[in-house]
Image 1: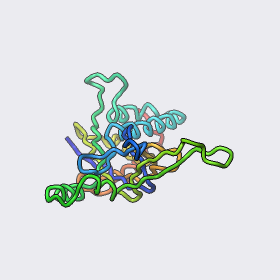
Image 2 (image 1 turned 30 degrees about the vertical axis):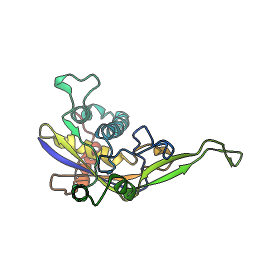
Image 3 (image 1 turned 180 degrees about the vertical axis):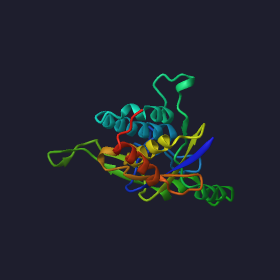
Image 4 (image 1 turned 180 degrees about the horizontal axis):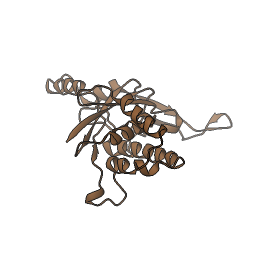
Length: 223
């Protein structure tokens, strides 16, 4: 197996909603672990990248190059109704806060210096919004949403079951570069982010892989 890293920094507050709230306090809570550390689930992250991949392939179809990248797309995200021979070769882990911070928080718990609520409140804030009608707030429409604060970093392990090809990494870098927002409220200004592809040592290889993608497309790839 070969592991790369997806590193993300939020450029705006983000709501990684988990589908429920806290009665009488918050209508939409963020996903967080037992220590109160927010995270974005790997399945959600795969869906976001898969959506960008579909958009890229659609654009390439107009240039007659979609077929060339189909194999790489299948390696990354598999095919609908996949069988053993066409399942994805890439496993995307949860996007969590950096391991150093996670370990520091864990030690704080072990020493009884921190609790889950303290940690969650230090990394998030509560935003309130209401529907408007004729320039005035509508009654009973006030909603509270917990958001992860901007500039918060996340990282997710990208594990290939076999060594990826140059095309696999090129298309993956293009998908990562195209991913600009995540979480609920993406169309309302929340969840803007900057994402990078890094090697196992943490070195940024986004531009190098993206350069191969752009060069191949520019030269009219074909198989």
